[in-house]
Amino acid sequence: MYLQGKQLMQSREISREDDIDFITYHVTAAAYTLRGEMLRLAVSHVLLGFQAALNVGLNNQDRWYTTPLELVPRKALWWTLYFQDKYITEKCGIAYFIRESEVAVSDFRAGVVDGPGDREIDAPKRELLQNFVIYCKLWTQIWDDFFAPGARRAGKWDEIEIMDARITASQQQTPPRLI
Image 1 (cartoon, rainbow, N blue to C red):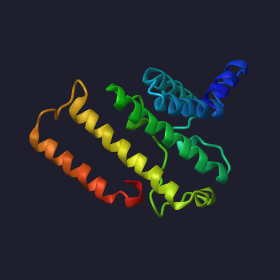
Image 2: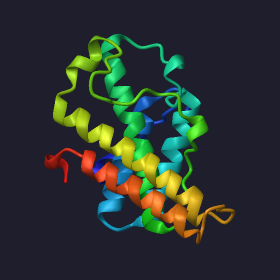
Image 3: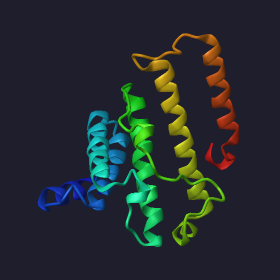
Image 4: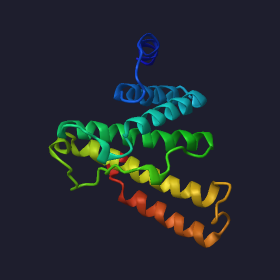
C-alpha cells in the first residue's frame, strides 16, 4: 500500500494547499515507515503532513467547511497526525513539531458530541483516539518540562514525583482493553 501510494503521489499533481488526500498519504506513509523502523523517513512524512495540515487549516476546527458527516474523519486525521508527531519524535529523541498553541480541534472525550458525524464512530475507536490525545499531551508536557534544552523542571525531584503521579493517574484511567 505504501509503495502504491508513493507511486501515485509521484504520478499525480496534488495541491498541497487544499488536498486532504495529501495529508492522508503522509499519515499513512509515516505509519508504514515507522513500522519498518525507518524513523528519519517517518519524521519527514509527519513534517510534510503537518505543513499540509496547516495549509488546509486541519489544525483549526473553526476553519473547516465540511458536512457534519465529514467532521469525524477530519478530526480523526488531525489527531492521528498529532499522535504520530509525538510518538515518532519521542522515538527519535527530538523535539516535536506540533505545538499546543497551534491546536484548535476538539478531542474525543466520552459524552462530547459535536454533531451527527460523531455518532458514526464507535466507542472503542473513540476511546483509542482519546487515549492517543491524552498520551500526546502528557508526553508534550514531559518533553517541555524535563527534556527540552530550556526545561525549567529538569532534575527537580519534587516535579518529577508530581509528573510520575500524573502518569500513574493517566494509566489508571485508561480502559483495560487498551492496555
